[in-house]
Amino acid sequence: MGYLQYVNVKQGTFSEHRFSNGNTLPLVQLPFAMTGFAPQTEDHGGWFYHPASRSVEGIRLTHQPSPWIADYGTFLLTPQTDAIFDTPSRAWSGYRPSEAILSPHYLRVRFLRARTDFELTPTERGCKLRLRYPQGRTPILSLFPVYGNYTFRVDYDENCAYATSDGARGDFHKDFKTYLVLRFSVPIDREKTVCGDTFLHIAFRDTAVEADAATSYVSFEQAKANCDAEKEKAYDSCHTPETTVSSA
Image (tube, rainbow, N blue to C red; front, side, top):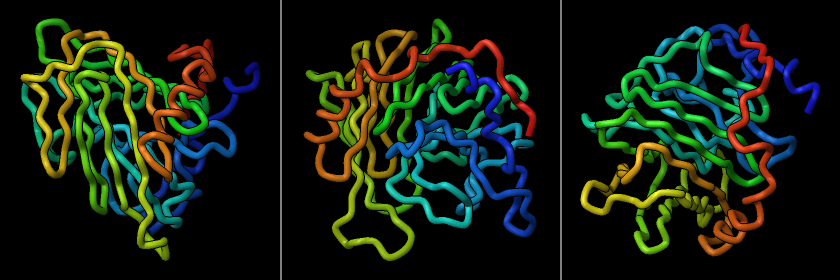
């Protein structure tokens, strides 16, 4: 862990479709892991992150190593409060890139519109999340599609959210699907949670929320098994590194 503070995951990300400075992504991900995470500042196909942008649409669960290599099985997680929007292009928030922390083992982004701190530390097949919403507002975590067909549902007894995506660019098997499970530490508010065809707005009964997330290419049962197996394997959950490198 001593060397992680020197890793700059933003190196090579100052790129656009017409001009490359590296065409990398600031992946928060374990080495050779199944799942990675990165901020989505604005979706332009493979180019969904730019270090100079002062807006953020959410944190993307991604399998994309480079803008030139297609993503697949991807979801977008966006905190919202009170005024709730059903698409990332409307739910976007301002943020301060200089204050965000992006390192291999830890992410922290403050969504200014929602006044919410979003923290994440990765596991091999998912992550641990921590959300801190402001008092006096309705705390919402939205799941949005990126491309492909999606399903969303909530199990209030298990306090879990379930989602699938068959989104894939390239020559993938026709039956390909990613299964995502999110298990929350606080009760989900049944009355304020809204599940649509292209979004899931999960409302909570507390403003301090933690969650375990895991994915599978097999089934929800396997995703839940992965969640159980990795629950204690993450690095110190949402632990802020003492030193970070934030230059582009």
